[in-house]
Length: 422
Ligand code: HAX
Image (tube, rainbow, N blue to C red; front, side):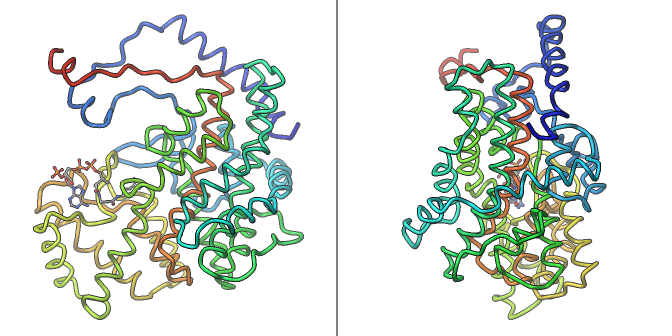
């Protein structure tokens, strides 16, 4: 039992009671209607999932437990996890105790490293991430607890143990993938005498000795941690874990979704776009050159990577947080300057083009250029960085759902003919 178990014990009972009362007293309340265009359009906007950890609004963006993300840019990933699962900010004592729990798992098992090394040299880093997680499934306390007949009201406790182990293993797993896949030398051991998760991750990657690299890794892990329940990776883990599959299966499945170019992989596409711009113009282009280039792409039927969003209708606050980081640390390399010039020009171009519902940048428009500036130039790895962060939110959502004893997910499907006759 950890300090987090003690904190969540009464909360779990309160959540189950709240859910049961809602079901009993308001179970037949109608939330809205579903139009055929929503069914055909990827369930867009259908209110069908419960997610207490975070919310995303069109006019403001991400709030974690109702706190705007811009007010959380100085916290650690460990505190983010505490906030996501408990709904409260951790005290210094709680945080130190949680960090000590995390630190027990920074070294990943040797068989995981061996599994990664046995994979073909050209495996995508996201395939390696999924395989590493599946190899670690045998560590699951949750599955062992289920096999022993633990009642469903108590399963969240072993889910929490798995969540802590899984989140804490992600930096070591990701760093091993980076070093093995891109020939960076030996897999590095975690730090001694430093329990901080992002410091350990920054160290094990071995990318840069600049002290602000650790700061960027910390910010990156906090900003990408959670984005409510309806995005592809969150919904995937929600569905898989609703079958009582353990977190290793659920997060691995979610990573498969994150690897899609319309979801997490977009960040590597954004950096590719910036590099293409730099190569085409032989350096940082002028605003007018960017404007012409943007129109050329749009007239060619191509999107502007890093712009637009399915929910947001303003600049993504996570983009702003990265922008402030670049300014604070005076990062002025060509890529960052191109990102900033695109930001000055492209929203007006997209508005004039008139198609995108949101002409403003999303988080992916900035993140890659900062990783690149510190020497992480392997684009294919960027979605793994995203995955290390997103595992924090996925695990928090799964713990909360187990505390609520949420049932298996089973919506209804219809044939096209049934829809046509509706
Ligand atoms: N450039 C050009 N056209 C764009 C556009 C952009 N950046 N964003 C949207 N549009 C177009 C769409 O392609 C669509 O065109 P059609 O009607 O011809 O199909 C039209 O504008 C309406 O789209 P929308 O309703 O505004 O946007 P969607 O909700 O359908 O899609 C996307 C949201 C993020 C996928 C979209 O804006 C896009 O493709 N952006 C570029 C890629 C990108 O930045 N992806 C990262 C998203 C962040 C994320 O979730 N990361 O995990």
